[in-house]
Image (cartoon, rainbow, N blue to C red; front, side, top):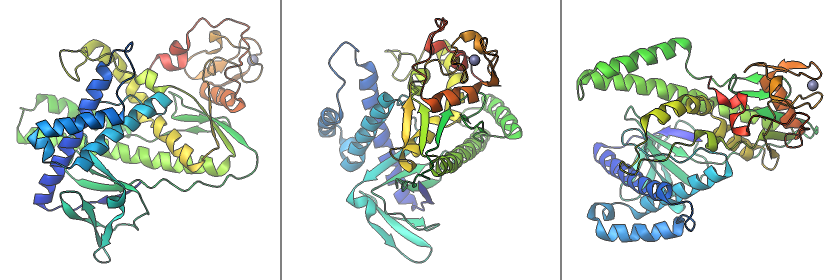
Length: 396
Ligand SMILES: [Zn+2]
């Protein structure tokens, strides 16, 4: 993803923000329809049906009609893709988009490739109903078929081209690696390497906590509150940048070093699934269950697992294999004995049958590399359901 700073005029900013509002509205409508759909009824309406409903909505609502149909339809397509990713198990469940937090829209097709170079440092992108918007040529523009315009929480505008990275050639060594998404570390490799996705430093984390406390004490609408919010947004943006950077480096490294990369076919989404929305309040959830899930969700999302798998599938196209993760964390990678007792704690694996001791995440990664997760010999019938495997039961 190559990102550029966009430099819209004040008038253009207003128009871009309107696009963001429309895209968000359409996305949230689609989400509401999808999440309210009774599971026993016929399949949820897909893109074609929702696009028809959008046409109807545009006929009724003047403000929606005033916006760009391209932007609104694309929001539906994006939602459709998000649902597919969710069912494929690579992404978490699509979530509610909030004003001021998720401001963005996407343009796909011919319009996306119409970039005009103004001079050595500036170029312009064509945005429907807005016209040419300038952006800094901080690096060469890739040959992309779509772009996304976003406004971050600090109010800065960005332009990102979704260029799918070129597949990296396999080394041809026949080497297979297993990658386990751990809770103790971001990822463990079957080679014994432990990878940690950098988030915020302890100092930054402490500052974030302090800022959040301060925010709670600020008067709504005050200047101070505005300043504190901006400082919080800056820290979040920094963590997100580091996460993306780590995912790019790690996926390139793995694609270069190994012929076959096996990952757990973890329905990450099943764990990040939110409780059912409260029908009375759109987007509202019962607070206690929400809090219980929050800690675990943070751990997974902070580690950027879904993004890593997605990038691996691009860079090591056709060389990524998904392995059923059942019992990988309780099965001994040496003798194959499978028992919950093998897990001494979150971090340590110690086989009760052969005494093999290893880092718990690495042991799981070796099982994943062997692709033997499903065929785990069950000398001891597992008493713990996969959902409550010790590895995932508690958050870090
Ligand atoms: Zn063993």
